[in-house]
Length: 130
Image (cartoon, rainbow, N blue to C red; front, side):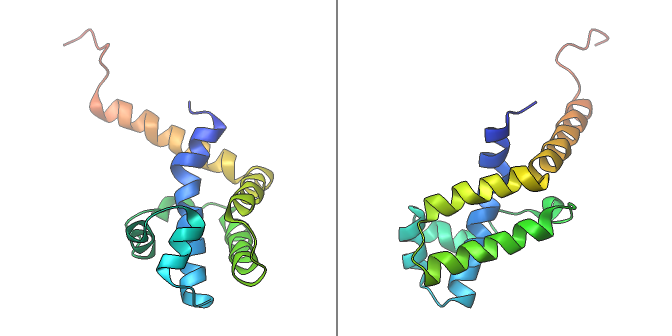
């Protein structure tokens, strides 16, 4: 089982970057270069987030807590665009939201189930019947 911070970094952070980048570019009219600068990533990374080549979250978007999380990401994008809020501080706030809404637990359970299924599908390295 993964620790909470691993789940956030591997599964939640890319979603946050994708959603906030999309909001900043499409709703608030920021350039991809400006978003990249604020996020501390390359312009190419922002392009990939906008094209959903990074931060794909189809299975996570169907979780019970996701709509609340999505609204909070939109609030963060607004704060970054209109109030010059710091992206890093917004990440910390969103991490707290992920924990308080139960999304962290839902994602952890989803990933644990997938990891267990992957193990069964691949076979165990400890299978003595082979």
